[in-house]
Length: 298
Image (cartoon, rainbow, N blue to C red; front, side, top):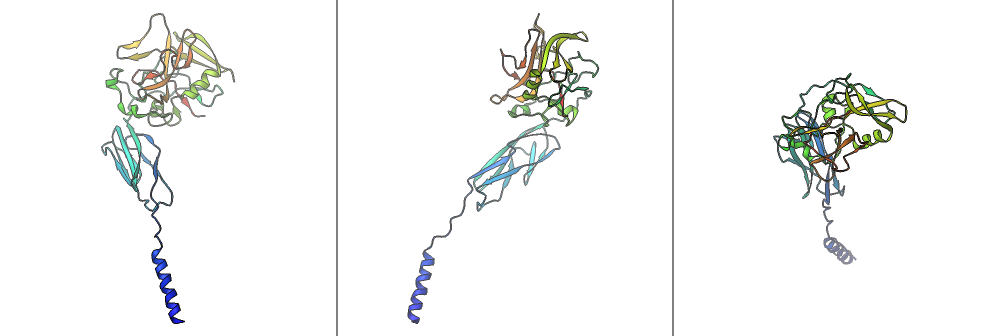
């Protein structure tokens, strides 16, 4: 009997020794959120990491930056150091993901706060352009390159703040929104969708206000109105004023999804155009000088 038990015990040990050890669960993918981040010097932002599968054996994240002079990272906390762009990378178990961090220059331009009009839409619209005096409806205000809250010496690629070129995602209300940077968090440059809402919910007519030709939109919802002057636009030659053609180009906060040198704008003209982008030319080059009509949260 004892001999039989010994044989059984030996067999059990042999069987246990033949069993394969459990295989280590490897990391299959890593994602970082957000994938792109706009910041200003001194800002901090926490990034999050999603590791799949969640029961992977190796879960320790190693963080790195492509340019510590622009942005640093400490256990997922990004600090903006200077204007420029840097790739923040999270690496886990042989897999990695990157967040593109764009640090914009600190704005120094002072602008007056506009009055607003409630047209019954999702946001309040400023009654004047960014940089114009609140009582001067016909004033054009300042001309900005897309995503740049300062006035350049010349409106051309050489004077463009290259950090804004990285953005192909919506920037409304972020640190790369000119209106937000200059007026505060309640304000923003309108998105293409907000602009389309304005276009669709107003009846438009060509009028003159304060000696400036433009268009007036009367809300179909509550009868309130908004005047938008034909402010033209600027390039390296100065103001582009086509003889006999009054028009206006106003930036939105929406970049083109396919070309990082382009962004969408509000195009209006004496010939009845009132739409997102000039239908002949499409989105605008980001270093073109255009005016901005801000919107405010309700």
